[in-house]
Length: 430
Image 1 (cartoon, rainbow, N blue to C red):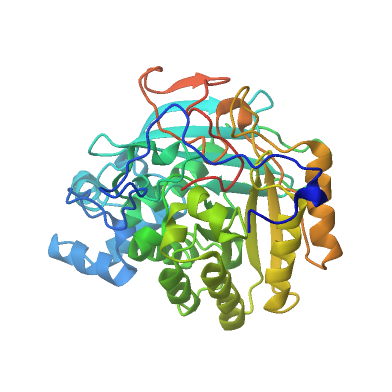
Image 2: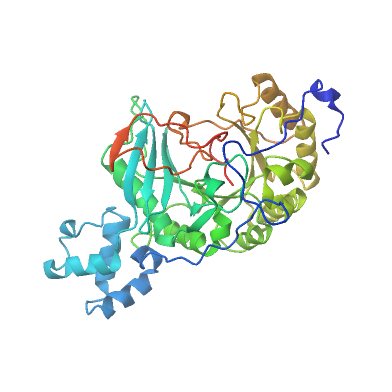
């Protein structure tokens, strides 16, 4: 496909993907290393968010307390967003410490919090129980609040543009560790720390309304725990957070069997495929998992998700200057999507955060416009994705979880770039 006539793009060069400032892990035959299973490492202690309400009740009974205490604990955690026993005044005073210690072991320790100048975006750096570092990004929009959550410490997909994947996969996050990011974000909102409030009397969300699994890690490589966390998010309070599944987006770089499995779950989440190239020759280099499941297989699985659920699919496409932004690629993408039908898909081109001197930089405005115009001419609904958090390296793909520079709890207005040659917004990650 890379030999397509260049006349349509004014003989623009074809830039090849390559890791900058770090060395990709490779197999003995020189292929990018893919890690689908986590190393044999310890998981955190079981937390009530790992359990269904019935399982919590059974565990509380094992502790010698009435089962209804599990519902009270759940209300404190999922409704009041607290694990502080001193705030649980409806529990027996002599039992609070024991219940919290057994049912709510510590999960996330805040290491650093970076906030944009206008206060509407916060990036959190969390330390897990074993010292692993992960990040999440909280963003306020008019009428809604979105949290970009991590699902793994590190990532095994080894994409060359992604800061997160530089060191490979440390481990999968537990169900409760994923959920805890939402609970802690809700606590921050309740404290009034997320700015950017409307001044016109319009609606401001008082808690996280939207979740995107576009932080650190490949969500579908941690399938069971991610699905369990989604169920905990949508379970009615106090069993869960009572969120809408339609406001939860699960993304993947293209793990086809897991996409098909997700389609059978019966949870109407929004599904997003991080495609970034419609042709296999480029995508093999850009998204190493394409060597396992090709672009057409990933698109077929995305279409199958639409067929099974009736939910329109999102195609995420990072526009990278002279690498994947050629007009003929827009035409090819439109052709492939339309070959499966009409009305089933929406494309989100994503401007990369420019890095001086890097091959990983954003497309020129006229090239971006041409790419979008080609898709729209093909009848593909297309929306240029809003960018958030660039000044604090909060764009997904910038999440590298470097934690040595700030003391615990420090609040900073801007951070340094976390990964050479990386960036993007919302879904640039391996």
